[in-house]
Length: 256
Image (cartoon, rainbow, N blue to C red):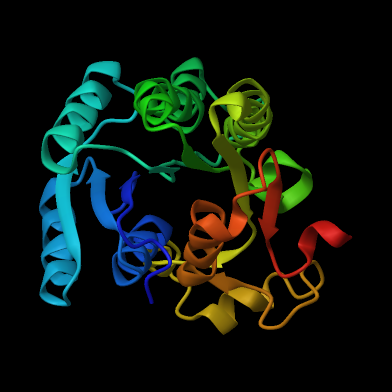
């Protein structure tokens, strides 16, 4: 308890999955959480649950691909809490189309959310972190940004977008280290979330059966809270001398 006491954190894509797990964990560790998503009704419901559990959180609508939407969220965060200590760029989408199947609209949609959304988030919050004299940014990439094959689930744009996040993270770590702003990336492997469940896979163990020859660590698929704990470590002062790193949370998949 208390690993983020007094810190203000913006988390994108927080209505479900890894973003929601992050919001819940951060609040339990003392952070003031600004949970954002495009799905406002579900987001508000989840934030109400966090508040009922004793957490300090607010729900704000955010389209990560829209710079004005980012400006509104940042302004409201500063108005309510006075500062921004942490940004978790978690929001992302996947379209399962390869190079030959994808259309320009598919490609642009994925890149706008997965890559431009990360850039716009950093662009919006870094000036406030500079005023504070420090900050921590955690960008969600993927093992698809490191390796190929089924790691990108047939998503060419997804793979490209997550590779771009990996590189953009290192760029930002180099340029803003002088401001004591740390920028790191988390690279999930196979993770069982509500989205996966809606696709027909009923359990983490069932999902892991599909990856047992790729991820050596049982049950071969993780859960959303595994990613949330990676977010927590990198966001916290425990990682105060860590920047520009890529942290795979993949059961050993990338060790192949």
